[in-house]
Image 1 (cartoon, rainbow, N blue to C red):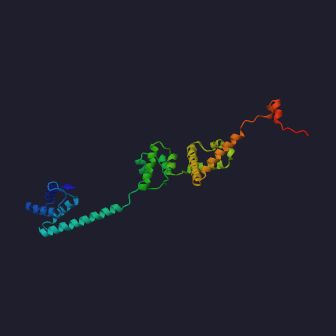
Image 2 (image 1 turned 90 degrees about the vertical axis):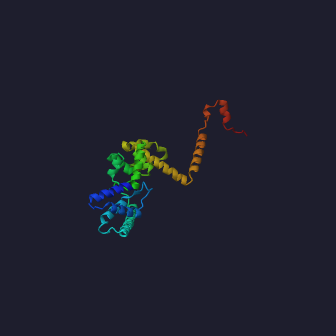
Image 3 (image 1 turned 180 degrees about the vertical axis):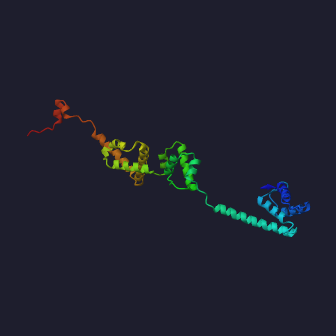
Length: 271
């Protein structure tokens, strides 16, 4: 928006630079008609106009003597027509902007915006469940930004993957190895899992923990959905009571004194 006084000064300068050579009477006549059709915004002393309004004024100044023949009706009609056209063009422009799809961002843009190196950026893309491609939508950019925020909070790449419910190829491979190990163990041989863990390379230990936690959570959720949690707890309690009875101290017969040993033996009645 531009102030009325500033636009008037520009009209005077334009009249001089373009050698239109309108006299004061003609300038005042033009100005009066323009402000009549385009009242502007604000009070009388601080009225403001758009740049489009100013352009209409300068157009009329160029055509004032020739095409418009200094005729008040022609000038007024021209200003009104240009104003309607300008408003229509402005409306169409706003519609185009509102329907225009937001521009995506490249991976380079993401690295630059969030100050992250190439390798960490690739790992974070995978953890967020985002593919490697030329451009990313605003929704994908928002997801990547959320992943960056989690990293700044101290989360690991594996923890970010868990947050988004995503398993990286490394985590998938780790889960497969764990499942193979656990499948080969009976309940009383579970301790042997520890012996086989070194088969998984050291840099995957973090994925091992994440994968195991996810598997455990998934299994518990399945049990809860089937309503088996209470039954398992009750069986565990009953099992502990049974084991307690099995381990009650039993006095061996050989440790009893002779008299008590005799009394403990079954007696045979004489005929």
